[in-house]
Structures are given as C-alpha cells and as structure tokens.
Amino acid sequence: MADDTLLAARGLSRRFGAVQALDNVDAELWPGEVLAIVGESGSGKTTLLDVLSGRLRPDRGVAWYRDPAGALHDVHAMPEPMLRALHRSDWGFVRQNPRDALRLGVTAGGNVGERLMAQGARHYGRIRDTAQDWLERVEIDASRMDDLPRTFSGGMLQRLQIARTLVTHPRLVFMDEPTGGLDVSVQARLLDLIRTLVANLHIAVVLVTHDLSVARLLAHRIMVMQRGCVVESGLTDQVLDDPHHPYTQLLVSSVLQA
Amino acid sequence: MTHGYNFAYLDEQTKRMIRRALLKAVAIPGHQIPFGGREMPLPYGWGTGGIQLTAAVLGASDVLKVIDQGADDTTNAVSIRRFFARTAGVATTTVTTQATVIQTRHRIPETPLRDGQIMVYQVPLPEPLAKLEPSRAEAARMHALAEYGLMQVKLYEDVTRYGHVSISYDYPVLANHRYLMSPSPIPAFDNPKLHMSPALQLFGAGREKRLYALPPWTEVRSLDFDDHPFRATRAPQVCGLCGAADSYLDEVVIDDRGSRLFVCSDTDYCAGRQEAGHGG
Image (cartoon, rainbow over all chains, first blue to last red; front, top):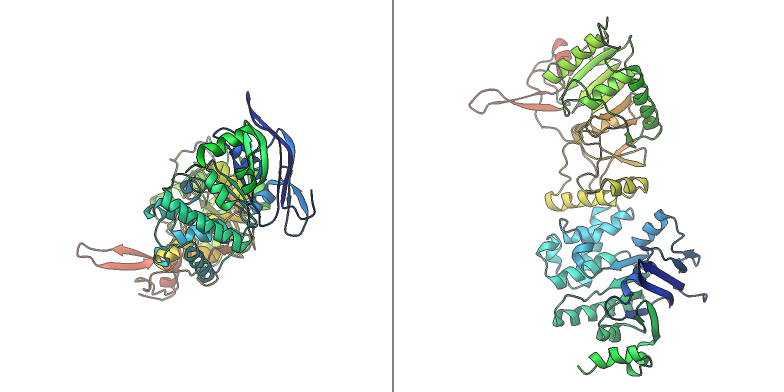
C-alpha cells in the first residue's frame, strides 16, 4: 500500500454457508476521503464494512490500518484491547438505527461524554462543556442536553449519534446507511451536516448506502458491489455519469431520472 | 468441643478450596474469583458467603466478632456468632480491638482496625457493573480490559440530575488502581476506611459464589470527578446516647408521635464511649 493510505484491503473473502458475501475485494482509503459502497440489498456492503472495521473476520485476505504514528496494523491480527481502544478513539461507527448505538436511559450529554470518559476524562465541567459544544455543532439545542434520547425525534437521534461518535476526533468513521429510515427533508439536512463536519474535520469515511444520491452528495469515490464482488469503482461523478458495467448502468438508470 | 461437626462446620476439603481461591483473590486485589459455594444452614442473603470465608480462615485461637449493620446484638450477628461458638468452639467478643476475625454486614467498625485482624464482608452483589451491563460475559471483558467508562457515565448522570453523586451505599471503588470493586453495601461513609487498611479484608458472595479481597495496605479509591470529589456523608446530628459527632448514625423512631433518636450504628463504639463517661 502507498505511504499515506489510511486503510487498505487485499483479497477479502467471506462466506456465510452457501452464500459468498465477499469475493476477493480490494479497497483503499486515504485520509480525509469519503468512500461510498453502493449496491442492492444482499450485495455484501455491510459485510465489507464489518470486515474492514474488524468486527468480522474474513475467510481470506487482509486489511491494514495506519495509526497516527504511521505504523501499519493488520486489523484482524490486532490484540482485542487495541482494537477496542481504536474503536473508541481513532475510529467511529455510525449505525443506521441510532437506538442500537445510543444509551437510551442516559441523557444526551452523558451519551456524548461517554467516549471521553472511556478515554479517562475525569473532569465533569470539561466533559460537559465539550458535550455541549458538540451538541451545538450537530444543531441540537443546548437546552436538550439533560433530556433522555427517548424524547428525541429520529433525525435528532441520528445527529446525537454523530456527535457521540465524533467527540473524540476520530480519523476514520464507518457509516452504515446513516440516513436510512428518515424522511426526505430530514435526510437532506443530515447529509448537509455530515458533509460539512467531515470536510471541516478532515475525517475519512467508509459509507455504506443503497441510495445513489447520498453517495453522489457525500462521496469522493464509489465502489459498486454485486453478489460480493466489486464490479466497478472510481470517482463518484465519473462512475455515476458514465457507468461502464451493466449492473451499474442498471442502478443508475433506475434512480437518476428523479 | 465440636460435637459431631468438623471444626468450623465445613469439611477440610471445602475449606482448602476456599483458601486456594482466597490466595488468588489476595494476589489480585479487587478481582472476583469464583469458588464452589456450599449450602449453609442459613438462607442466601443472610451471610452464606461471609460465613464460608470465616469458616475457612478461622483457627482455634481466633477471637470472633460478628456485626450486622454495625450492631453486635441483632439476630443475624447473634446467630452467626453462636454458630461458630458451637461448631468451632472459638472465643467470641463484641469488642473490636479484641477480635482477630470480624465478620460484618453493612459496616466497618468505627474503632480503627489493626495489623493482624481479618475483616470478612458479606456481599450480596459482587459485580459492580451488574446494574449497568446485563451480560456477565461482557462485564468480565470490561474488567479484563479495565474499561470502566460506563461506571463513570453513571456518576455523570448522577451529578447532572442531582448535583452530586447519589450513591449512598455500595459506592464503587477502584482497588489498587486496577479493578473496579463493589465494597459490599457499606455506607459510602465507610469507604475511606477501606483505603490503606492494616487489616486483611475478605469479601464473600454466597449466592453468586464469588469472593475477592484487599490485602493490607492496599490503595482503594472511590470513583469521582476531579471537580466533584468523593465526599463521605453522615447525618448531621450527634449520637443521642454517647454524643459522638464523628460516627455513622442510625435514625430510630422511638414513639408513635414521630419522635426520632439518632444513635451510633456501631454498638461497641457507642458502649465504649458511654463507659468512658460520654453522654448524649
């Protein structure tokens, strides 16, 4: 892999029984880059995300991550304490359903502060100031800081999850359908927010989505998957405006009229 | 002297098994060690864990004191003390300074412990993360990796909602800078006495079949925030019988018109002060 690659994968394969969920997938990600993985349901997008983030072990292949000091780590050979430490500091994971990631019995401020406290922050006032700052950045009113997430709307929950993830300034964030399940106007606002934050903070993102318009809005590069294989990849505009593979042509023609 | 019982009720193999677990526990302060808990002739929740540990460490020359909520004269304390007097024939006492082994529920004596004494705590819930993390496997992993951020989140929530940490008993501590530990349901007021205690402190949970320990002179820190430091709290009154202003007090309703009396929960400490001429 090149000297400045943040994340690189070679020959990732993973099988679930008779289903080949990933078939010899290569991928690269540079710092500050947004990579979209698109494809229909069951094409292996989420499996790829789980394998890249070390949550799932591949049958074959290897994934490398470069830490801030420049050292390379095999994601699946890392000791568990190190991988877990990575997941709560340098990495982030945004799930489709914020209720899976948030603690619903803990106030919004506590949810944002959790990663700080997991890293050893022990000053209540400073944790609270940081949490408030982040809630404002994701456009949640500071007066809602001590409310429980169960009183929040779907869009607010997703923004809260993003604040909770970004509070430790991760360099790499995995997102699994971050706008899925939200209505269109809320989606637009959320996408705009993600785009601004990611650009300002220079965060690299691996974004899984089935929605080509989300990919077009956020991603620099795109990978199209079908039945576990990457059928086409390249710059987002290039792939979406001039699709070469028949499957990509089908995908593009099925949505872009809108 | 033991009339049909092995010394201290439990058979020797069981006592050896418990002692082996205790050695492990002493080697890793605050780390929970599973042990093969036995059925004891009293119900779970009445001190089956503590009584097994006491049986395992008791010797013929020991002097035993048993307290329940600080008192030597409550049902549980009386029956456990009598149990060991009958099955082990050991001397018993209510005087803290004379005891070599002290089995306790809910309190640490006010009189400072000394080198050579053994405290045995009865523990209902040994896992401090139990209320926060439902999976025991996950809780074990959190202990293994020293991931205690979640406990801190609980404290954060308390400060946010009440302005202070609202845990008044079983206040979580960090043993020897490493393991998060439940101090058993002693009041938070007693937490500072765990720190750098000259006595050996053993904790036994009978229902959960776990034990853990603090060797003498172990650092024990109550969790807190830098800007909201741990504070030991007590009722602001003085003891109505001995006038003590520094002991932990029980509030006792004394008639049907709502009159109340605050008295030391540690009966030995209170009686000692009364004998020395202090009055309420």
